[in-house]
Every structure is written in C-alpha cells, then in structure tokens.
Length: 253
Image (cartoon, rainbow, N blue to C red; front, side, top):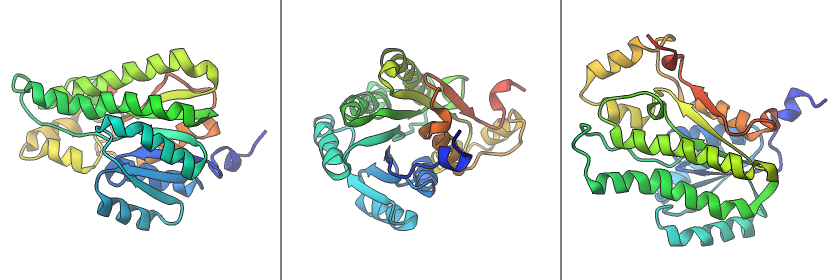
C-alpha cells in the first residue's frame, strides 16, 4: 500500500484551472502546486495571471483565454497538449455573479451566467477530455445555492444546479474509461464573490452565519484542499460525487 505522502503527491501531473488567478481558483492552484502538480491558470486578465503565477512559484503557468469565446477552445486544448503533453486534472472554476431580485433577471443576465458556468464548462471539458490521460480527474465548482435557496442570486443558483447535473451525466457515461467526474460544493466562503453578494446587506450575512453550525465563513484554502483530494489517488474510486464544504450549513438550523 502507498503511504499517504505518495497518495497525495501530484508530481508529474498537470492541472488546468479556469478562473485560476483569483479567489477559489487561486487557492486551489496553490494547494495543488504544493502537492507538486504543474498548474496552468486560465483567465482573461494577463496581469492577474502573472501576479498569481509569481506568487505560486515555478510550478505555475498561465494561458490567456476567454473561455466564453467558444471557438478558441479547440486551440486552447491544442496549446495545452503541445506545452504539457497531457492534462491530468481539469477544474471548471470560472464564474460570475449577478445580484438581483428573483423577478428582475433579464434574458441577457441569464445568458451571461449560463455562458460561463454551463456552456463554457461543457465545451471546455469536451475539448480537454481527448488530451487527458487514462486516469484523469475533472472537477466542477458548484455552490451551496445549487441545493438551497438564497436571496438575490437566482440566476447563479440555476447555473450552479446545472453544473451538478452535467457532472453526474459525464460520470455516468464516461467513468468506465478511467476518468472521474466530481463536484465541490462550497458553502459561504470568504471570497470577493461572497463579499459582492453580501454588499449592503448585513442581515444576509447574519442569516448565513446563524444557519452555519461552525459560525464562520470558510476560507479559500478549505476548497483548495478539497480539490487536492479529488485530484489525487486518495479519491481514485470516487466519481459522480458532490463534496460539500460548508461548515455544516446544509444540515439545517
């Protein structure tokens, strides 16, 4: 039997993380790089990507790409193959937030949300799978709002719920090939996106903490270590699963 050190070691593995320069994506990149993976950050803003790679160190690389430019995704997959040989881990993390009342979302709002969370995640996964090894891991970053209601984020909740269905469908059809498909379901985690959702609404923050048994927000590295688990051999018999990291918020009041 391997030691725990070997099981969690990602030496020789390449992980691609969308939205990897900031927030949860950056923390996941840090955690995977600390386990010796090469991490490739995908994003639109070159300066943010440069800063993130500098902070992570020599294991970090980046490619500037707007994943909602769907026609560019085959070229992205080709570039990854040319530079790194194969992709072992794909983390579909990129996302946006639009905060509005439930009846105020426009068609354009929904299109923006679905284009990043759903269309881009599906189309990128479709392009990356042929570049993956025989035992690759694909991780989708969903949200607790995909399970429970929350005010002001209806469009985001729809998108994150859809990611869970996508993950389970991929797992059902393709896990027999050696690939694994799982999701992480972060609870309320201290990121710029959460701060945006709570802006100007102190009662919302109080309500969140009141229903979280651990009485605090999560930290980005809590999601990072969860991603490491799903990326490494410790989870080699895990597929089609949603790993909830939420301080107990979903168990009720």
